[in-house]
Image (cartoon, rainbow, N blue to C red; front, side, top):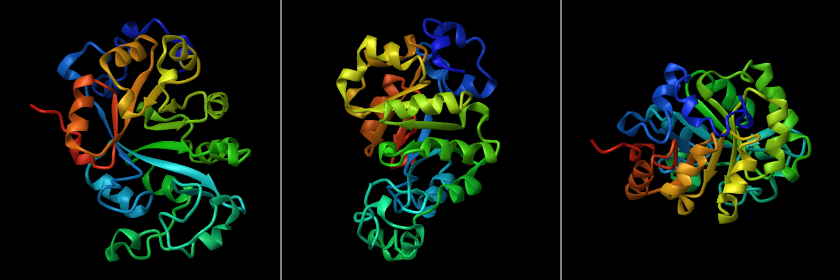
Length: 276
């Protein structure tokens, strides 16, 4: 269900949401009944090494609604979960993700940098994450720098279809990227999977830009500094939901709760608790 069909009908849609969606995001005017999605950024990355099984398990234990993961591709075609386009920052290795084989990446330690208790954590594969968490927690899949990996959209599509995850219930699978052309491709390949566009550019918050995004995207996901009530309302008026990143303080979480966004992408899932 794509937003080209929904522009101008956000209010009408509040009447036909599924029961889960009624609690998840009723729209901009439903007050205290609105539930905001709690999205663990690279897993619960404030408490465990980002984009590792330890971080994803921690997010599940903390009852986050989603884990957010970053997908790239090894030299020999394996889809892997890592944020940076190099392995330098989050492992004990060096080099570009696209220039390393999966066997080479699988030898790296992706956890010790955050503490000895995480020694031996590996860079997960996309397959591993899907198989471990599907049906247990929502998965927000970011295609990281897809322009570096021609055909990655097709690969992701195949992986989801193989597992019957191309028709997710309650929007529990979402695909997003900063690369808008990539998301247009995914929209065509996975018409029933919600699409998100990421941005930190104020130019993308104009009414004209949001109208264009709404033709293929279901979520507009801006950086925290761009969010204000006017933007939230404008996104909703264009039939999309809004999820903002990256929350690392309770104060930032509270601000976004007050702005009535639909989702908060955070390193600390326990910060996303509305005040009574």
